[in-house]
Image (cartoon, rainbow, N blue to C red):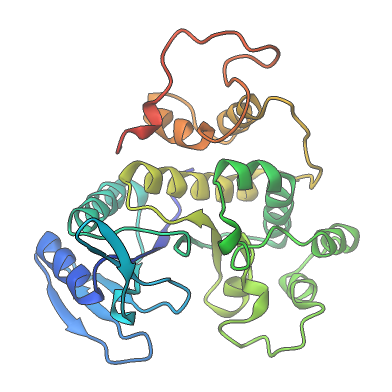
Length: 312
């Protein structure tokens, strides 16, 4: 589940891109460089040769702290952390410590900020991509509530389009060209446009067809909280693994009066098992109704709730 390579983009404000790069350079014992391009990138070259970038994003509402108040700020306070290619076992603690340091330096998020996880799509087949579409479609409502996707951000991470899902399952594409045709059906703009409208969905396949077979998951509110960031990464990797390994997937939405139990069963099914993922599960249960321990009724649990506040 955790072996696929990934990258992550974390949007925030509160400090400038220059300050964020200085924090990262100190952490990595690396060197900084100004990009001077459209994204006004500040880059940090780590001793291992990988480059971490802090770039401008026009969708971020720029703010900073002034005493006890949060006030508007200039565009230099628009910060998007763009990681290099990462491996979970080697790098998850690194990204967690970096977000802790950025938060300590004054970084914070607001409702305009999101997190995007980019997954290596080189192992995907037409079958697994269709699986991915159906998995996200079937879990639309549960995921959006669990992740508390803000209304302000839903224009950038829409739910799976019912028309797309219907066509994907009625046509049953057997090659990537057929899937690509279905994905772009109904759009008039050029497919090579980097900011093509089709990309603004929870599951973005525009990046798969135009950017070296990368699958992007965009449905995460941003956080400079190590535990939440880890939970989002694990969820993205688990969803990707389910799409790759499951023989088929249904787009049918499962109705449940007990959301927490439904999420618990699903997370166990895709690999969130054992103490290693305890805090990840709790972060994903937090905003759901019901009881994770019991399918029916509302029996009291034996322990106090609240583990999800842990920065782990």
